[in-house]
Amino acid sequence: MRLLCSPKNAVLSASPTEARWFARILRALIDHYRIPPDELDAQTANAWYSTRGCATARMSANDTREWLQNLRQFRSARLPLLERCESRLRSPQPGRSASLPLTRAEASELVTALNDHRLALAAQHDIGETEMGSSLEQWLDLPRPKHQALADIHLLAHLVEQLLHCIAPEAADWPRAAT
Image (cartoon, rainbow, N blue to C red; front, top):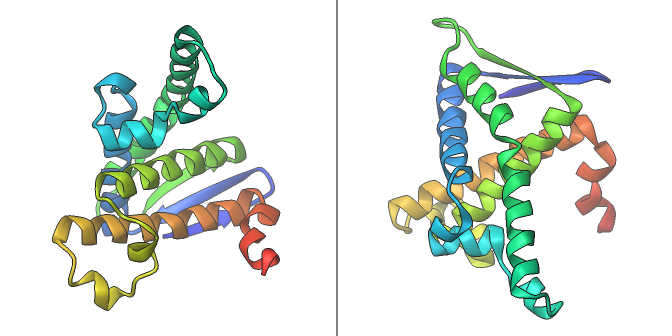
């Protein structure tokens, strides 16, 4: 995938194979965003809608419920963007790369959504720091679903970094600036 940036927008281009992969990721994210928090699998619900902070802040049950509803609304607001992106990636011209134009605001929302998906994948497959830092050779010893989840997490991290370099270069360089 390649990302071309201008001061006002970004255009992501993807080969047919990359487009299918990314469309699959977006479809999974869209499907998860549509599920109410109390109906999500426990791992994703804990990653996206943890109430530990609410408990620490001693929020009432009503305030916690309202907070969860607001979080869901924020995620649901991204659905039109994600559906448009998925549609563009699923139906490129035959034999041509898919092209996905994004405003800076859309690119920022996409970064947030992709990080949501990365969190959900890590939670669903019980992926911790040890696996995140492991080498490709070590991945091969993992069960296939965990191996695939790690690959998706790392590929999405690369895409997020590219998007950040485009929309907020100062944010994209923070890990290097801290060392």
